[in-house]
Image 1 (cartoon, rainbow, N blue to C red):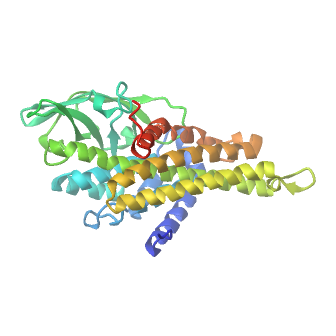
Image 2: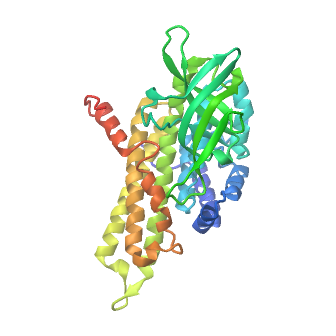
Image 3: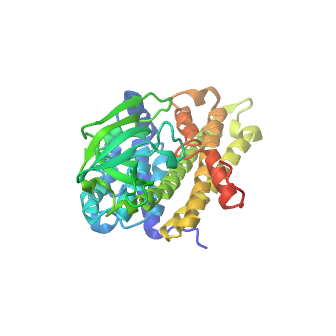
Length: 387
């Protein structure tokens, strides 16, 4: 059992940390409040190779795994720049295409995903289906050699920034007549694909959308993989990287909040000249939050290590646990930081209340804490399925 990063991973972490701090949380907030995107940070991270660390070298990536991408997600978040599209484009889309796409799809999309010049977002969630992908209403049907996609998607991140959206639909199996999942790479400017921006109470430079697919016509090669049999494994290929990188972003956000609060409480002096951090009523909650964040980081490291080793079942369990732990720890850390700073904690200047919406959402998406508890109860504790 080894908790140390390799020298290369150490260098990656330090380099990403330096990049994130050069931009900082004020940059993130300014972009979010002005309705702009973090284009400069994303482009520089792409040029430096940080967006493609998990993509094979033959496609311009770093040849690493989800462990390396989790480091990128965590360190940018720890610098106050939690980039949601890191989860969507490099973690989900690149993994799905690399593992289950055709040779042509890998050549067409992975180099751009690696250097940041291409973004592919992910569309699975639907208004009626919720967490139950078996009830997806978006349907793909054959029309000659083409596919026609119809349906609705919701809470789809970053559609306005992306050239493509990876859409999860259902197709009819010709042999059995049963519906089965399939993934399609859909241009965001495809005729019949429209979007409506959702107003969210989350301060983020990445927007959320409703998507409407009205007989969107796609060529045969838009289907991910060589056949419909690739659909289910391709879908699940993206879920563990999603959970692990979301968890890493949460852990980084927690670290950022605790660092900001610790700096403030160590220097803020009232009532006799002692720092407010010398009082246990202030220090202990911050210390408790720091413990929870560190525990989450350990589970993230375990989950990423298992995933990169190809131990998918174990990685699924650890990935869900990591996402749960990091979601709770991040929310606790930000709330505790706000409390420690008092009124200053609610100002934009001190940069912690600006994260309240995001960390609260982290306990809901991409899978809710309750569904993770259901998963653990069933697959770890051996309980009957409750839903």
